[in-house]
Amino acid sequence: MDKRLFLIDGHSLIFKMYYAFLRHPMINSKGADMSILFGFTKYILELIEREKPTHFAVAFDPPGGTFRHEMYAEYKGTRKGMPEELREQMPLLKQMLSAMGILIIECPGFEADDILGALSVKGAKDGKKVSLVSGDRDLLQLATEDVLVRIPKTKRTGTEIEDYTPAQVAEKYGVTPAQIVDLKGLMGDASDNIPGVPGIGEKTAVKILSMFPTVEEAIAHVDDVEPKKARESLKEHAELARLSKTLATIKTDWEPAFSYETARYGNIFTDEAYKLCNELEFKSLLSRHFSPEQGLVSDNGSFD
Image 1 (cartoon, helix red, strand yellow):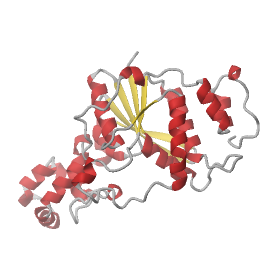
Image 2 (tube, rainbow, N blue to C red):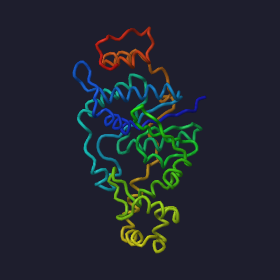
Image 3 (cartoon, rainbow, N blue to C red):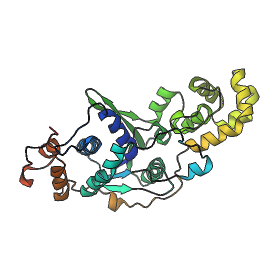
Image 4 (spheres, helix red, strand yellow):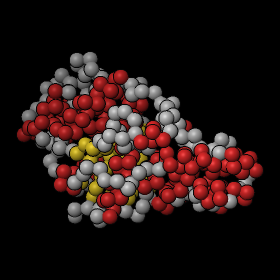
């Protein structure tokens, strides 16, 4: 059936790979660090092998700022720049995806989250079963009965996937997917430098949203908000709560350049991909994923 659309948050996953390999980098015979490229490629191959998507695309954040930086200059201001060893691998990573015929999407001014959000809405509307794969829990706001949010967790035994439906989001976080942005509007998000309301943490934010389902409702009934400390802070910082919610909201009402035809999953085990894996000394990927008639890889690789 022509219905399984997989959308991958590229930057989120490569950062997870970076930290997973930080203590034990994978160095090839030329002395180059290939950890992230190897880990990402391996994960994509295993994901496709296991899930058998009909359509597949990887979204990346664009260079430079986005519309959120125009709204709030300090957005993500506490984050360090991309590590140099990771930056050096990015061109090769995108070359690998292109060699495998996997669609790459970048849109100036929009984060990968916004691309995934817009395409998940489109896919569900078009009757697809959508899977969003990301290490970023911001995407939980997109979970519906037709959009499954899948968060990889790296453990010693390998990578495991946490799947989130609306019911599972509610069970774990005490709010609906739609309320994730209200939760962040109240409590903020340190990783993205979204301020939230001073003095309101996660437990208090969940309690407030159990009484008033949105930031706007809580502000409208602020005299009934408990506890008192949260009430006074919300009165004083109502505009900050609104701004924080807006910053946390993934933009879905736009149309990235995309077609199902270009995203259709085909033969990723191309001659070009085989040649690149061989050059990069990804011996274990070649022996597991490529057919014997495509030739033998030399034994001088260090990726066993």
